[in-house]
Each structure stands twice: as structure tokens, then as C-alpha cells.
Image (cartoon, rainbow, N blue to C red; front, side, top):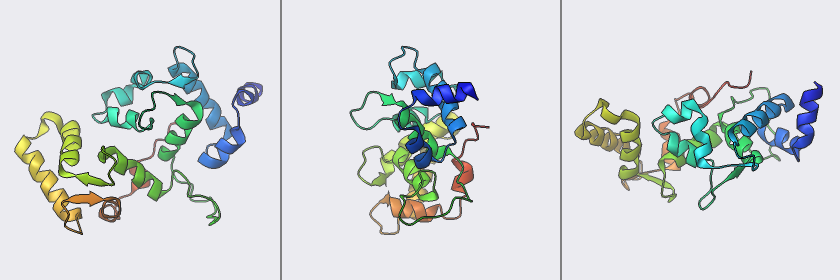
Amino acid sequence: MGSTNSTLSKIPNVEELVQETGFTPAHIVRLYDRFEALDKEKTGHLRPQDFGAINRLAINPIGDRIIGAFFSPGQETVDFHSFVRILAHFRPADKKRPKDPSMPEPVNSRTSKLKFAFQLYDQDKDGKISRAELLQVLRSMLEMQVTEEQLESIADRTIQEADLDTDDAISFEEFRKSLEKVNIDHKMSIRFLR
């Protein structure tokens, strides 16, 4: 326990981070250790290439997009607090956590997880997923498993089914509605903190 307290004392505003993300102090310490292991140059910041050491991201077909989600436009590094906030999207929802309307929605809520997933598709950040953006993701995910014609057919059918306002793109609300029956908490949760 002394080691945990010692590490926690190195992290500024740790109580705020625990409150905001729902991670326990022990989880924060484990994430801090992981962050430090990725920070090979010991700068206190991670660059996109530092994430290459995470095997599951390195082999993930959309790993570059996931890594990109850690960085705001024009931002070349991410600090520990930002790192934890992004990872909190993948924390299973806390069903026992009381809903307080005066508090912001937790970053691991269904809506927050959907917004995070939506941004992986909406690369030009215009609030819509275009056919071209959908095709880029499908190409990355399916690579050589299907033909280009099949990819285009999947993209067209997906947009046709989800595009309620017939503007040939998928808005966040359409994205959310199309995934109503999907267990997002299960699909977007990593149980890496046991």
C-alpha cells in the first residue's frame, strides 16, 4: 500500500481524476505505471508512436484511428490526465453509480462511448459520417476479406438503413439510433484493470 500512496502523491489532482473517470486510486496507479512504461523518453507526455508498444493497438486494423482519438487536432502529445480520460471511455459502466443530474455525464456512459466511436468514423469532424469515411473504416477493418464491390455495397446499405433524413450521411443521432439494440458497454469495454 505504501507504494500505491507514494505513486499517488506524484500525480497532481488525483482526486479529481478519480471522480471524473470512476477509476479507483489503485487503477490510477496501474495506469500511471503503464503510462510511464510507454513514455520511453521520460518527458511526461506520449506521442502517437509511443502507443505502438501496445500490441493490441498495433495489430488492430483501426489502431491508428484509436490512437488518433487520444490527440486533439494539432496536438502532438498527450499528458497522463488526458490519457486516463480517454481510457475511461473503455471502462465498463458502473451500474451502481447514482445518477446525479448536477454532474456531467460519466465518460463511460453509453452516450459518451457512442460519441467516441462516432468520432473514429467522422474523420473530417463535420458531425456526419460520409460514405467515403465509412468506406475507409470498412477497408481498414475488412482488408482483403471482401472485394471493393462488396465494401461499397456494405457502405451503401449501411447508409441507406441509418440515414433517416436522406442526406447520404449518418449524423450522430442516426448513428445512436442505429445502435440502440447493440450492447455498447460490452463492445467498448476493456477489463484491463483487475
